Image 1 (cartoon, helix red, strand yellow):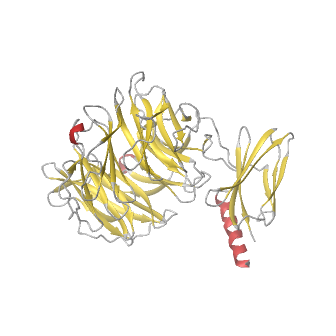
Image 2 (image 1 turned 45 degrees about the vertical axis):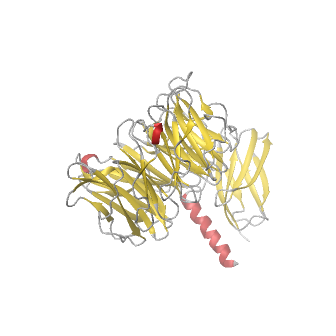
Length: 545
């Protein structure tokens, strides 16, 4: 027992030295938190959760000009405090080399980072992977070459890159351009020690296209949906299993008679039974189409279904699989819209719409390029979009009812995302963190809580906010000096971000005090948040038994 107590005290002291204290959450969307505003351009954000309510974010960075494009990253904890250096930690840079493409995923309790680099203005010549621990320290002697320029291969494509973790390591997918200009799809597996499963550039898949969208099938394989760049071109789908074998003899044309795609991107997601779902805005009908395909190439529904067939133009769909259902969001130019509205639909895996025909309205504010996205948030989903010169979010329940007010909460006003160059990361508490590259070439972040309150990254060190004793076994005393008069909302979260205590009290004095029983709390690290009308302060404390 004494060892456990000492362990928690050490954990508490470590947390105090690194990020404990108060936080100031600002509901003013005109104020922007910059993850990175270093000189030069930052772009191409790749983000994911750290498993404890925080986020890892990586981006391409030109702060050093022609010295070479760099990859920088930042880890923000569950309170939003940056764990690494201001403006990010350097992960890779090679003199006189451009990094054209980059992707990062959670891997082995750390980070797997992959990128395509090459000479300035020339294109990619090498695809690398490297493994870093949770603190950002490289775990391999040097980055591993996964694909490169050799023989008749003149470029590593700067358009196709993805990583899928699996039980033996990860699969990396990418494109290779041959002499003459044709691009084909390639892939390799990398194990936990950085060893490749197949020789360099030895795998090839020709999918009737040179732009690819991919998705892991949840059994070690993946799907590829390929198309060329023209309006009206069809999408062709293939499947590669864990052993690198194609399970579909010839890529399947999923568009059929509904017509090919327009200029919008298409999206692929998979269910738990290795089936894939592909969504796209079709041409010439300008509707949103969706199809389901099995690993052997069978089209489960016989062909595509129409998610939305309303008059006007629907395009730029995004889609997720969440709690066994499909959620789709898109731009919608049906009659009455000023450029585009935002609509969403929920479907089951049989392709049956669960909400109103042609979807539910999330926003009727004008927008030219909304770039909508959707992410799971607890049992609900959150859609985000750029409308009326604001970045907004709306939370939707499974029954289609809206959680937040009409047109959603405003995330940001002054530093909007650069089109779709943004990521959404949800936590176990239902909050959603948005990280984006803004039009001014900086990296920004904000968070929306389940109640729709916008939260920026916390500030620190409010000395008037005290907790004692700390560590604590039974009664925790919260004391706030020089405080405001009004309602105080108190919440306590455990180390996973789950809320374990909440109460509200009215304060009529310049000092506020409250005793909270933690006798029934399991031993561990906790965070307490005290919210007033104008601020939210937080501290960590440790419960010992």
